Amino acid sequence: AAKQEIIRRYLRALCDYKNGQADSKTVSRLEFLMSKIGLKPEDRSVVVAAREKSERSSAAAMAIELGDGRVIRGKGSDRMSATAACIFNAVKVLADIPKNVNLIRPEVIKPITKFKLNVLHEKDKALTLEEALLALNVCQTEDENAKRACMQLEKLKGLEAHSTYMLKSNDEEMLRKLGINVTSDPVFLSNNLYDE
Image (cartoon, rainbow, N blue to C red):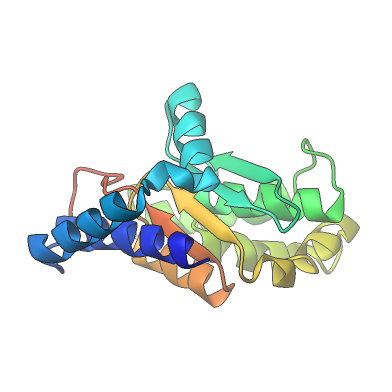
């Protein structure tokens, strides 16, 4: 557990440095500590899994390790961010819901994406984790699978996750609220620094 925390701190320091929120000395100290102990980021299974998924799919990806050791992955798409896709895949596994089942009805997604594009003038129509979870909660009133998926969210507390890109602040905040120990690679998802 202590070794995992050192790796988490190192990966967070790399992202903070890339964002201008930490100095190179902090990163160097953690790199030195990791080399003394013989640790590398890839010692976290979720780091390897997320990077492999991203490489295979040529898309942003995230991985989460369930309590039983299974690693669940998700990739970004036009419909959902990689963060949302990963969390949805994880709750499907926990609720024993088939992979091909949509937890959010298309008639719920469509007005959200239309609102994001036409009213908020956002470039990305993919649902963030928060948007996807709110939509899931709307759907649970009429859909048993969505209800079962919602009931699994509490089981994510304390799990390890990794993203192949620096998370947008709202996705990172939602993961923290769910109690997930998340790290990310120091890579911007977009070239636009102000695209939050």
